[in-house]
Amino acid sequence: MLPVTDFPFLLLMIAVPAIGAAVVAALPKGRDLLAKQVSLGISLVVLLLAVLATAAFDVGGDRFQLGMAVPWIPDFGVQFALGVDGIALVMLLLIGVLVPVVVGASWRDELPGGRSMTAYFAWLLLLEAFMVGVFAATDVFLFYVFFEAMLVPMYFIIGSFGGPRRQYAAVKFFLYSLVGGLIMLAAVIGLYVVSNSQLGEGTFAFDALRGLEIDPGVQKLLFLGFFIAFAIKAPLVPFHTWLPDSGSEAPIGGAVLLVGVLDKVGTFGFLRYCLPLFPDASRYFAPFVLVLAVAGILYAALLAMGQSDMKRLVAYTSISHFGFIALGIFAFTTEAGTGAVLYMVNHGIATGLLFLVVGMLIARGGSRQIGDYGGVAAKAPLLAGAFLLAGLASLALPGTNSFVSEFLVLIGSFPTRPVFTILATAGIILAALYILLMYQRTMHGPARGVLLADDVEPPAPAGHGATATLTAPKRSLRVLDLDRRELAIVAPLVALIIVLGVYPQPLLNLIEPAVAATMSDLGGSD
Image 1: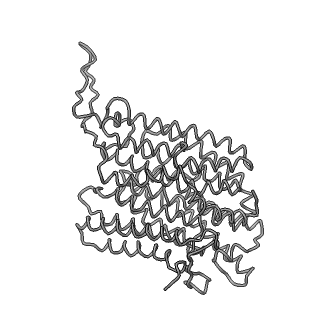
Image 2: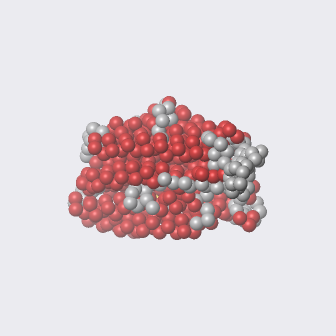
Image 3: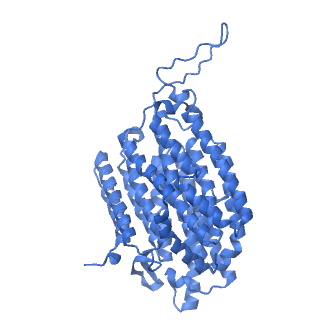
């Protein structure tokens, strides 16, 4: 019997959803219910594997655990090598939680013309397999393969199942990511050449590359190759323009995974590859990165305040939050870095819930425009409560999960980057404005727009002889509160927001040693 640490958790977390995607895609047309049931079951198996892998992980043990490596392309030193540290492990847990939630949230989605949803669930499972591979890869070439492969299922999820401008958004997402990936490929090849010159044979193994002594000038070029790809994926300003389009046009389930997980590959890449492999270049470029991070916090928050489209507003909030994560990473302290990784997890939970409740509201009202709603809380108190909690977590209210991570980022960044930290705190005020204004306009006040209640009569003309100006919409709709399925979908995320807001220590215990090891590679000290 294999020891627990030798059990192929990571391989199974990639293989199970990949095989499941093939099975779902092969189902006969019209078997949508079976496709949903199979997809939900497979996603729950992946969640179970993630939990078991976490239980098997030894916090005080080696940096990378649960690993395996087999030759893949031996002539070029490429291995199919997997392993996780605490940073990657918490991201696998996030994937394990969000994918079943997304499957459940998409249960009643319908396509125009009665088209089958089978392909949608097949793409979701394939995307899950590739996302696990990105975070679990310990071979740089394998990481690059998964990094690029993720684009394919997300492209089809947006382009085939998204909103009215889905084709434009899908192509823009694909082109931005592809350009970044090609730039990173050049840097990956350069890294291979450097390893060949120093070690006598080329390698893509992360541990071997971490020990290289790379010339500072070469480091800067290689750093930029990786950084640009990760900055586009994150995204940092000014590489961000694809996200508002993709986030607003993607189906709700795709949007949750896009901002909850896929974008985190960029900030994960900063920590995993940019800092340990190119420490001199990381220190050199840190001030420039911090300017982009703070600019993103303030600029995206201001743009979010001006949005009338709810999905687009949530997408801009994500860009602002990623500025805080980048600030924590490039502050070069263990405390700030730990807060940044925790922020990656908490942002996925809070923004995932916010996207879900926005999607539920849109499904009831048929409109993404904030101005088409009002008075929802009176008719759907459970929906309004979930909306409020998601919003409060997004603005990092004390007692919610995001507060702990944001506090760690700010308190850890201030000793080394005081000016940038002070400027970043203005984003907290702006976050309160754009979240609370959206909530107030949609959930409170008189019923109006597409959610005007069926029993509300249109107002009478303004006065005798005046032109009759009716405010009743072309169609009226009674708001329905969350049903049992929807409560089951939002309940896990609501619970995590509260639990991690009160007691985040289990996640911090996983994250802190890995971040400390990364700071040690960087050559810095707190």
